[in-house]
Image (cartoon, rainbow, N blue to C red; front, side, top):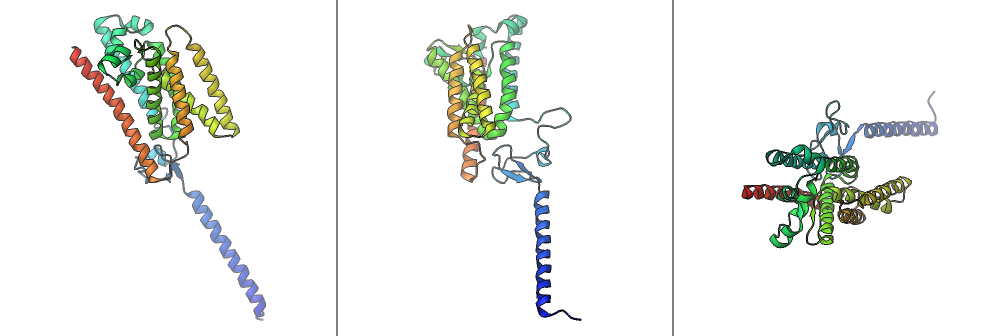
Length: 308
């Protein structure tokens, strides 16, 4: 017996609703199955199979595409900008050791410190060279040198620990810009505080800059997590400044780097860039930062060649 037209119409509506629901479920499952990763450079969301970021054209490693972060094989960490900075610091320290093997006792230098003359030749933030010979690149290269082994290991430990978090938060393009900016702020503070006879080395100005940007993060975000981050890094900064009261420690560089990082964190957002112009802007700044580092190292090498 055929159904009345009214019941057929209602049944059709029910069938249409079921089909629409099934379609919505299929679309949801497709969306849930799509894996997206964050570009390590600009922090934009990209598809899991992308080989290059469509926004900034940065190469995305296969490990990023399959969702593996910071693991390359077994126990080896993924190579990041933070690791590159740590490697440069260790490289320059090794060069200083080789120089000491030729002219002095490297073991004594490891524990007690390199001679001031050697550090000046390696590009230390030396006031008279900046003032009279206009070697402004020393403001940056001095932040990659260290006086002794303990000085190096302590700064690199903090850089490797805090730097990874800041780099993930801001992306590698903004992170290298932040690092160079805070290193320069620390060096300038040291230069003007001890003007004109400073002879400063060490990455602590840039490290305190990382503290500053994390403190600013807590001021920008009112979440409970952000407040915990702010409180933790305020304590780190206080402990570091108290330690900086010891003889031979340049607290002016710490204060300059801390202030530079705080200003950077207040002005620059940690959210991913949404426009092509913003992404290009930070890429240009990151290239300029790397070129400044490379240029400073080249000038140090040329200085050695002239001295020999």
